[in-house]
Image (cartoon, rainbow, N blue to C red; front, side, top):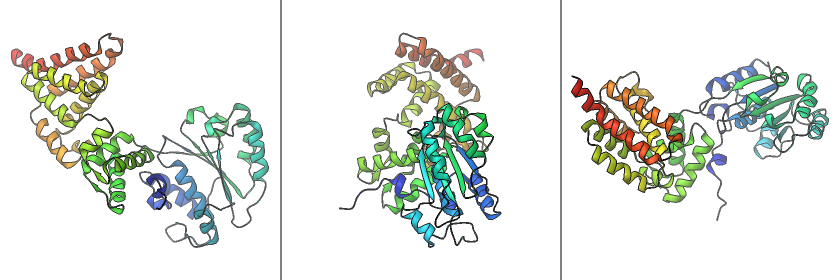
Length: 370
């Protein structure tokens, strides 16, 4: 039985062209390699799981490649590339600053930096979670970071740039990584599912992408979890069950109740949702997001902001045509007020129920004023 490799490792990008959602950064790095204008220190910052360490490794591999292609991608055939791919390269050093954050750790690193590479041109030092260094360690690192040996390049990575002292920031080229867009995550998961011969529904992948909150690594971890749960048949129902996500259908039904002024049915439906274990505050947050999705369906130019599968998109479009702009504006406003004030309420359920009754009264109130 072959050992299982998680998707985040198995499908980790190994070239600039396969990095997802960071095209401006990869383009700039490739240009720097093409023009041979490499800095001595780089700072990659951004949320977790967006490709900071991956880009650092690809960059380190590419600048040491002996046979770069015309598109500035590593050849994977020279000795430097082979040693990197087999995790035996002595020219690329990775350090976790979270567990090596003392002055002594940095002094050991400085001693190591003096040793030139034996095979390739550059020794690359990738230091993850650099913001975890102590103040004294930062100060000890300053001089080496500003004037390293010609063969040394530092790539620092962090999720919390604001914790890094200005003197370190001023010595680095800073690259801010973006959260990966939902559509990009869906496309990537779709490709992996096809390679692994996994049956899937596109709506299910959309839920996984939304749950990942812009982090590809989180999306792949959830994808593996769902694959195990469903035995390689990823459906919308199985995903919302496993991830404890409220079905879109409940929001559509609630909105229909609001439009009809049917607060009896709305309260019964709300009770059904609570019986499934959902938190009242999460429900009101989801309802606010539902109104937002209905609002973006109102115009062709904003329809692209709706990041769901085609079948659910049609449901949104159909229901949006029944809702007036005033109703949606008022609904978002009420949900937002409820979300902000629910923490100070002693009875969360009653607080949301009052909001539901107000939402059911919106259409009736407008008719009375006409």
